[in-house]
Length: 561
Image (cartoon, rainbow, N blue to C red; front, side, top):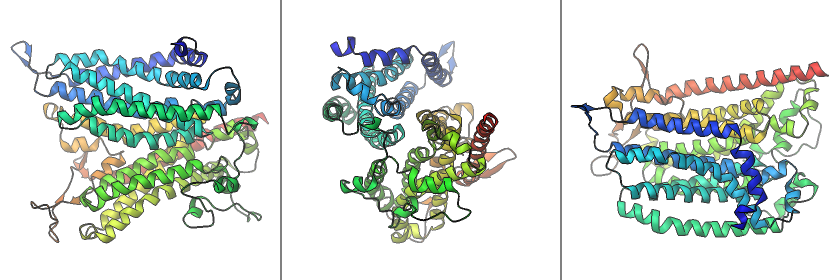
């Protein structure tokens, strides 16, 4: 209790966070949204003055609440915790915190609890609405209690892992990306176990497996973070110096980036040793050759190794064992780009401001259009190359499997979906970077915008699907809701199925075509085709907004010179 009552780190963070007007507004909006979900999903059948509750209504509402809040925990815990220690470095207060009389364990507990306290408050705010689901019948109080235990344990685990990433990287953007790469696979595994169809498996995983595993993770990660705070290796010069690549590579483990080898030179050209040719965009040359690796290659190496490691079992399960599920592997590649794309573009302009070099950039002879275009192309090149490294497995499957080889046009569609997604995520990050003042804020804005475009339509379709029959919603109308989601686009590509014996039908391929999107005038089109048309337009709009915002700042800077 001493850590809680006399922890200045915790007290300071709680005072600045919980007293903010934005905290109350966010909580009000969150509870209002959940209340709207219950209101519109509440059974409306009336028979002789009494409500007739259909079977499974309470269970479906419970599923919506649990899945929604679990996704909230998995997405927001890294956002709150990944900047806890790296933010101290960026604010030049990291060394002051380390030389304070506080124990490293006190700092760890204060940072962790302050990061997760508001998230826990949001989770508990939904408890009264969950009780309403219980009143409908068909739901046990033990299920509700178990779900909140899972949510609290997941929040603590994800937050602590993100805090460990924050202590290992000097930039919040790098810590946030690695946190998501670690947290999201664990979240998927946890969700698969705790939402299993078998009640025995579900109860055993929630009560007997999850608590001790979480306790083990907390203990191990806590010891690592405390030792890192006790014996920091990144102090001196305020922890913001440029990392020497040659020295870093001497102690690198696993993947080593060689700027002169393929495919590393595609996203990491070698440093220039001669003069730039005439007509070269100096901002683009600087971004590609120096800016991305100014803080070392640790983040990039971790990203490549983790993504490749995860792609191996997914390749086996979604491509070679069940090749009709190739769209789900594409969804994994899209998720990777969703995480990576904003990292290289959301700090393009804000980091110039944080390093106090924006005014110097604006006094050059370069036009705002060339500057913004260079920032966009540099970030797009890196994120696209890293993303397409994961498509080697798709190409291999289409070459080796006859059922895929006979539908080779679907490979072109999948690659186009991935390429369009790369453009959209990069342009969204650049737009947020031109509108925000801090890189961490631009990162959060980018992820929220992309989640609203990519993931929210899937959730809305799943929610509306439960009342589709009552409200007269057709499958085509449901498909129209998801035209901005690459996940829906990948799932809408017609793939082959198997015959009744479980074997591929050879030349007689049975193809299942998902519902088409319907538009006014009875015009219909596949979701993937509409996505390939709509998302490049969105990317263009995001780029134009970024150019307008940057040009407005350029005019202001020019007027003040």
